[in-house]
Image 1 (cartoon, one colour):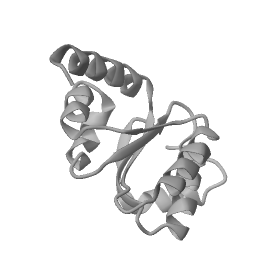
Image 2 (cartoon, rainbow, N blue to C red):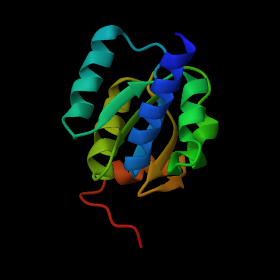
Image 3 (cartoon, rainbow, N blue to C red):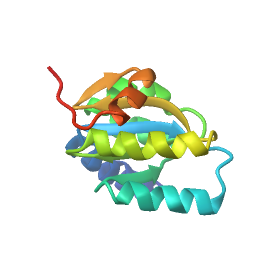
Length: 133
């Protein structure tokens, strides 16, 4: 990837991340192509995006955004699923998928613009709605 392409990719990712209040970072090593395809389909069903990003580019894009709070998790093979409005739907899809696919490993999350513990992802995924006090 040329420098101009990297700059454009970082700018586009930063724009997307700035708009997104909710993001879940996870490792996906060991998932087979059909499993990843199904996961992408399910994530899109929650009106969310799923990206596998190069860590160095993701770290640059996270600067100055709420994602900076979880940027330390951009290490090793990392994917990020994110949206602007529905943390519960996204967490449900990912936690349900992780139950049958142990190769999906949660790394970190940003919910309503705030970093949360990995253990809270499953809790949010089991809720029927979400409201942060």
